[in-house]
Image 1 (cartoon, rainbow, N blue to C red):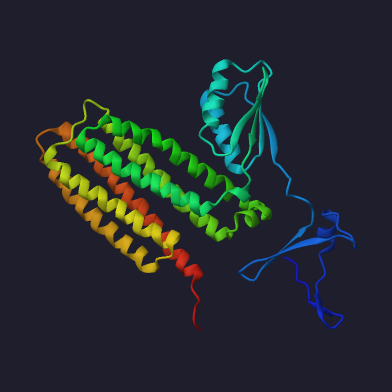
Image 2: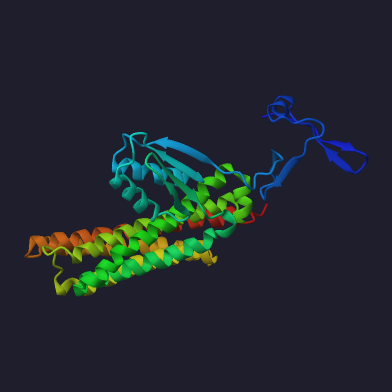
Length: 338
């Protein structure tokens, strides 16, 4: 950090000198223009001016020795960190099954499209600009998807509805896709001021939406896990437990919904505090239910119900995580009195 004294120039204009070494590194001279970004926290970001509206991040990676999982992981990572153009190179020739893996992976990512493919190169291109993205609306959409999946998954298990269970499993891709988009733009906003301007949210807000979306996606994963119990012929849930399970699952979703409203609908800190208190109540109720399972006649049934209860417990915990970040958001926004 360097310190500069503000000068008054011409009686009306404040001026401050730039560090000479930084100016040289950036190619700045007496005729250069700078972009200034005032922040709500009182800071001012300074950047050499240039036309970055068409700037794209491009890379080429050699996947000739990568496994299918490694190719998937590469594509997801390159999408998440913000690349606009990705070229996958295999000088020996892309096998047909590798192309199928690339196509399937791209289908799970918002914005990425397979633009060109030949024997040795597969080119992926991002087609969605941040100006056309609303991170808050994407987070709201993910909440609807997640809550619907969780509710339907529990219903599918308790009613042995395999068709409903398969719909829940299929919807997990939608949840993953929404999180991938939120993650991508949040990561780009960390290093690109233009991205922040286009998204029209502060970095604090983008972090909070990203964090909440991450909790939503984890709950969606547990909804998928619950739904898969329906497809397992060895898993049965005693009818006598159905009412309790449904009630506990509903309580876990209420925790998530109440906490999320603080961040997504500005309902106030009381909602977050209520969510944390309800999480404690849910934990107590789940412990009592667990004790009932110890004496259940059928160990296989008790084990299956125990797995469901674990997913319900984790749902409540993810809701509590949202409640804690909601309290932090309120603290960040509060006006403290002297």
